[in-house]
Image (cartoon, rainbow, N blue to C red; front, side, top):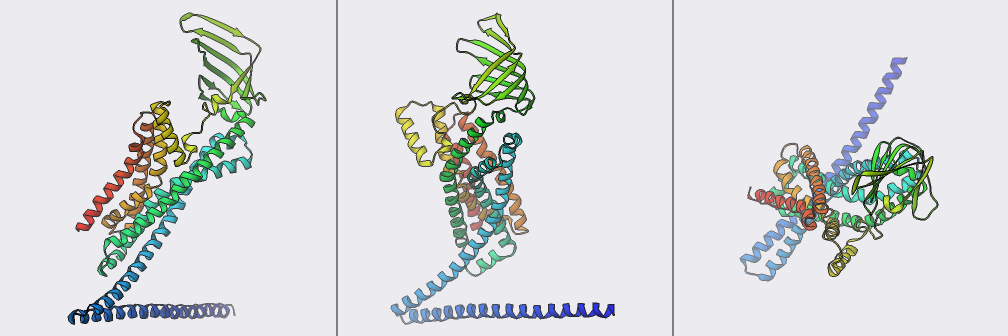
Length: 447
């Protein structure tokens, strides 16, 4: 009886599967039959218009030639438009997949950075979520260019491997038609990334800094890390072990304007929130020792010891020493106006002016890197993607992304610290990628 039931169960399952498969096959047959009829009708119309144009040419009938030429052009335009939309859809799909990948990578990196300074200090969850939200514009603007490069390389590599590009070429389509789709998609992604980088990023940065300042004021121990050295404006703080609001083995090196070096040491200190305006925290030191050294007379020094000492740490020494808005908190329009004003007044140093110029160019160069990546991805995928182009596209994309990211970081370092021209430091990686893409495209056209 058991065997009979098992047999009936298996037979019913197989029968239902066959019925389902027949329905799917019938549906697919009807679908492709309609498509074939439509394609046949399209080709038949084209042949009729071609014959009509030939008759008009032989009979020297200008009106007839113009009439059928317009019809043929319209059919060719519809055909090319279908191909452009198909390629654009494929590029968008691969871009979105790679965008999610890079978004997760940069987002996790941001979470880890917050975990070092915020999460381990037991900051309220609501504040942490807000900080993460304010970081999202930066993550999105960073992810878009790299997702464009990797996604387009993988997509075009797959089209080459599956011989779809070969079919496009055999049907009489030029490389310029495919390149047009790639560049348009790259330009649209660049515009989207620029909006995030130019409008939402300054807003997020402003709100992030304000909230971070509030968190520090409410919980000053966040700024103190165990066994670390914290450099402030005119002083350096050497920190021992930090246990909640208690710090052991703390040393402060402070320099006064008259050249006197002051060293304050304490075995044990309590970190407390201060109600005094401008004071971010106070350190109640137990059994402190204060040494005062005169640099002009090294042999002479003063030593002071006490049971208690209260040391006030001001906001400007930790959060910011300037009252103005940083370049990262401005839009491109505000930066351009500020740069013009700084050049006219000639009151800022060359290094500070170059920092503003560098940040202004960065707001354009990083988002529009997507366009240059699209220009490079097209010939690169078509030349090297004949065998397993999707995998090669992923490998090439990640390698080029790392190199581009490194070049951008190095450019910022040379621009800010070395004082090199901010325009060239930010745009050189894009120009190199664009020139390489043009060279590869010329090589592809010659083939």
